Length: 78
Image 1 (cartoon, one colour):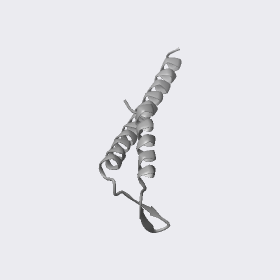
Image 2 (cartoon, helix red, strand yellow):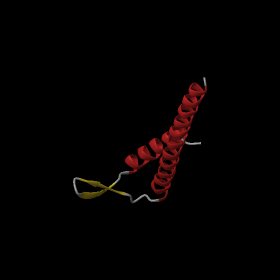
Image 3 (tube, helix red, strand yellow):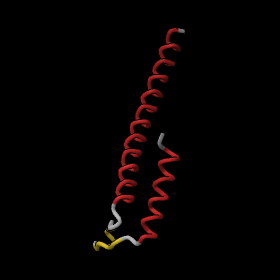
């Protein structure tokens, strides 16, 4: 019986560690998403590297990226 309890504790600890790692990854994702959103909102002259060339985003492209970033933040971040 004590062996079963030890096994369960090991499983519980493993699950807790996995949950903590996922939360850490989500925290990093959310920080990056919020930073990207702020850059999109505050910098209308953003450029994108396409095939080694820089080009300016159109207002429509910029707005689409803002909308997508907002959706990702609303879905994944608190």
